[in-house]
Image (cartoon, rainbow, N blue to C red; front, top):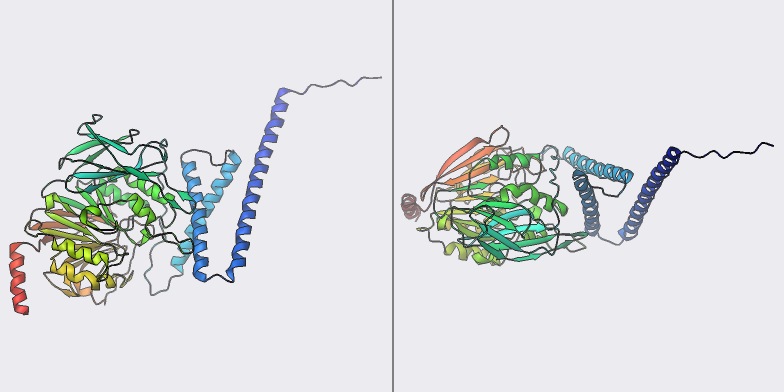
Length: 537
């Protein structure tokens, strides 16, 4: 009787079997995770259906917006990790499926937004489809600073702001006039904020100084990470200001920032709509990393726009939570009670800049209105020949986009600006460029401010392409163009300044519009204004 002989199994076949089992395990695990996620989504839908009968439409929209923000945040986080080559789920199959779902979500959102543009009424302005976001990944250790930006505080100090994932990192800035040689240091504070499922990193603010004007300093934040370089503004004229609005973080934004980066300037002014996060809090982090190369080297002075509001019904998130936490401006130094409006001096007081809030109470009797009266009354035009104002929603606008949205604020505050002889008013909101002549109360007036709309920094919503030819203010509009770009106001001396608008469409920042301004505080214009006032009487 023949005996059965055992045949030994080779090591290669055992390895192959183990690999098959491992792959099968990963696939089953990924399918199980998808089933769990699907069951949770179904449960949420059932809950929404049960409460839909007794809950107002506005509340349902608020819940939907929160859910949308939560899913969008997860998708952005997944793509950010993938861009850094990091695993999201810990498995190859899981990472592949998570990446596919995240990108599918992006395509869905992009498609829905594009459909909204296609379905717009024929009599409304039509913008091109939204531009893809330029997401700047985070590749620094938790204690290393990111999103570094600076702003002026008083006459000779600067505020350094940054974020660390390590919430215990020190709020300290070391600085000096030569690389790696820090002769001074300053401490500040840090805080975090929550927004639904999102919790920010530690947001640090440190004020350094006194600093010498027109001087280059090297600094390091939190005793870790990279060294940064800044240049303080000059103590006298000339002074060059870059002005951009409605910036966002798209390919168009990157073009604008590139053109600005090739220019020599002293300070950047932004009249609202910074990150276009719109409740998707990780986009605030991505925006901070995108602008860091410029914002860490020159002061960025900003005011809020409608995209900074981010309030939600039902859950009752307060407005401007992220904006106020991340972009702290020198409002207290100017006697303001709100980070949403403030003022500051530049060039040793030769220029006074007022940043107004279009989305906080501005009517007569409000705190902002009273503050504006006090602030303007304290300006001595013999010492301060230039008055510049920035706000978000334009008071004069011949574009079809956002018609009349700044009218209430104009009615409440225009007289104050006119009587103070403000030289120029910059606004954003409308995604195009438009320059008006000097105006007061809807009429050309050589004693009024020049109004300039520059909401064309590069936002994802595209351009506002249609200007109304028979608009009541059309005869006051001197230049219009629906292109992305930025502007530069070079204040040459006490009487003269030149404004140029630079279009992005060309390889270089081409100057498409240029105009010289004469200060309304100059003796010649002041005398002419007095003569006209006598004639009016």
